[in-house]
Length: 465
Image (cartoon, rainbow, N blue to C red; front, side, top):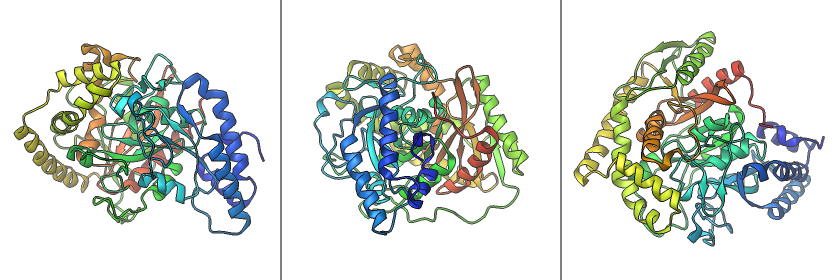
């Protein structure tokens, strides 16, 4: 069995390799051939690792022949993002000045994938400094949405989303501070899991400056996949602890069974602006799938959504962007700088007292949401309030205003440090519509369970031609 292995998800591929029906070298060669075939047209993988991948695949096959213990992803090709440290590779983050910034060791998430036996076949694209929902930069160029080239593939993990969607690897590692895993999943019609604060350890071995506290509280790692079961598998691998991350939580991956019927709060129309009718319809459609499976579903608003979104902007502009903007002005490309300037014009940097108040309010809002979860353990919103934005939409002030209006639902889980599972539901024209499922803290299992129900009704995502 050596043809079109790239069509398989990681769960099936790992099983076949473990059983000896397929070798890791065969799987890796097939994946690299798929990259040869489709990557020139979409520019998702911007650094090929062919030689290293084949060497690692041969070591994986030799380990299996010796009868060694095999990791959960033994021999499975995966990709990583250009803003995440991988030993011996540049952590360039889409910035020309950082093109030769070589990581001396792996970030914890990359180390976890490596220890699980994964084979790294490439590095995926992102915007400069990973701070746009358009994956385009002066160093690597623009990543193309394979469903509709006129629209963004999402960001900042846009290359990851396209790589998974087109079959260039079943799992791609991303990260998310305001939607950067879930938005590319939505734009490319795949699955994306942003985890709870503390679930997957994070730090950069290359860091020489302090990281903004807002980034510590709102940013999280997460996989992009074509199946929900692969998201669950990747979570099991990535959640391995690292004592150097003081926020990592040693919590079980499956919590106590919730009361039945499990109640779901649907939010088809997100407060604070308009929601595209197709996105509202996707939320109701997801609710219908869950209701048919025995969930208790109702349209009800969680507390203070508009305040939660405002808190993200206060912390994002006042803490994260306050530290990032000078680096962007010095090293960023022209589009990234213009996008950031428009963003800060629409959401100006508040004074320090307002930022401190936002941090305090965030804790109160999280308490209110956790209380709401006691009655409704799942909340389902659109991933974005609008369709994937046209390419370059954020390069005018009015366009950036539309982008930020669409971004509202993506900011909610990030602001509160909650998980969010993006799954495709329905379609409009060439693109998929989609929802995100938000569970209580550290209950990714509840979101994944619901995601599997929705996936069973909608169908498994097939690789985009």
